[in-house]
Length: 509
Image 1 (cartoon, rainbow, N blue to C red):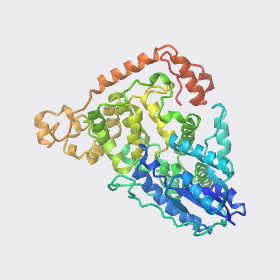
Image 2 (image 1 turned 90 degrees about the vertical axis):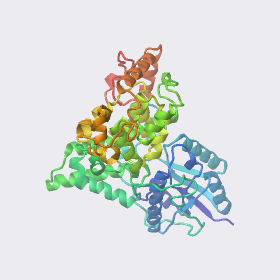
Image 3 (image 1 turned 30 degrees about the horizontal axis):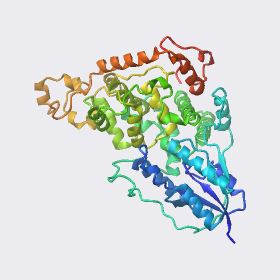
Image 4 (image 1 turned 180 degrees about the vertical axis):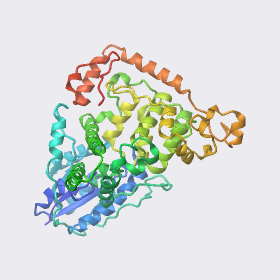
C-alpha cells in the first residue's frame, strides 16, 4: 500500500520563515515533500536568463540548509510540473499540495491553471496562500490599500521546529549555474542570493546606509552602495515584504527608545517604495495580459514590433553615441542592477528617441535585471513608454540626466573607456569636439566612439506628435478612465473623474 504524502511547492518564496504554506503543512501528520521545479521550458522564454538562475541557485542551496535545520530537505526536479506531480502520485498517495499564490509571467499563469486542473482531476487538495501585498480576485482598487496594510500588519509565521518528511524519497540535484539550457558564457558579475545575504542587506541598510538613501537614490555612481539592494531577495522571496516592514518598525522603535537620530524622510521613502512595489504587482494580478498588451488599446500598433536593427543593437550594447546612456547600459550589463531613474531613462530613450516597442526593449531588460519582477517590469515599461493612457509622459533628456548625475563624467569614463581622455567640457556631448580635440584625446568619432544615432530633439518632437494624434482619437478618454478604474492609485479620489485636456488622468500612479 502506498504511503500518504503532501507536497510543499516552493516558487518565488525561497525561505522557511514567514512562510504560511510551510506553517500549515507542518501542522498535519502527513509526510511532506518540499519541491522546487527547474522548468526547462521556462528558462527558454525571452524574459528569462542565466543571471536570474545564478541568484536562484544560491537561494536554493541556502533553502536546502534551512530545511535541513527542521529535519527536512529540498527536492529539485528538472521537468514539467505536471510530470513531477504524476511521478510523485505514482510512488505515493498524494493527498494535498501547499504553495503561495504567484503573480508572474503569463507562462506561469497558464502553468498554474494546469496544476489546479490536474489537482482537481486527481482529487488532490491544492492549498494556495496569499503572499506579500497582492490581493487575488480583487473587484476593484478602491479598498486595495486598506486590505494590503491590514495584511502587512499581521504577525509573521514562525518556522516550524520540525517538518515530517520522506527523506531520500528521490535522488535529485540542483542544476549547475551553467546548465546546458542556458547560453554559453559566464556572468561577469552577479548579486549573490540566499536568505542570510538578504537579512544582512536589510540590516546593513537600516544601520549604516539609511541616512544617505534619498541623497543617492537616483545617480548611478553611489546608488549601488546606499540603496538597499534588497529587490532580488524580495523578488525570489528569501525575505517577505511583511518581514521587512517588521524590521523597519523594530529599527525605528529601537532608535526612538535609545534616542538615536535617523533620517525619517529616508525611512518613509523606503516604506513607500515597498508599498509601490505591491501596487505595481497588483496591476499584473488584475490584468495578466499587460505583459504583452498595452493598457490603453489605442496605443497598439503605434510602434513597429520589428525595430530598426541598427538602433536596437546600439541601444542593447551601449553604443548609441550618448555617453550617459551607454555608460548606464554597460553598467547594467555587467552588474545586473541599476537604480530606478536610470532604468526609466534607458526605457525612455528606447521608446521615444529610438521608437522601439516596449515589448522588444522589455525582454532585453528583463534578462539583464537580477531583480526582474514581472508585475513591476511590465507596468513600468508601459508607463515609461507612454502607453497606459493615464500617466504623464516622462521623456528623459540624456544630456540633462548626464549633467545632473555625473557632472564630472567620472561614471561615464569608467564605463565608456573610449572617452577616458575626453575633456570634461565635452564628456556629455563628445560630438561637439572638433577634429583636433578628437585627435588629442585619442577619440575619433565613428572610429573610437560612435556619433549619436539619433537627434534627440527631433526624435522626441516626432514621438510627442504621434502620441498626441492618438490621444485626440474618439473614445480615448473613455478608455483612459477604464484603465484608471482598474489600475490607478486611489491616493486622491477627487481626481478619479478628472481627465486632462491631453486626454490623460492628471494623477501619477
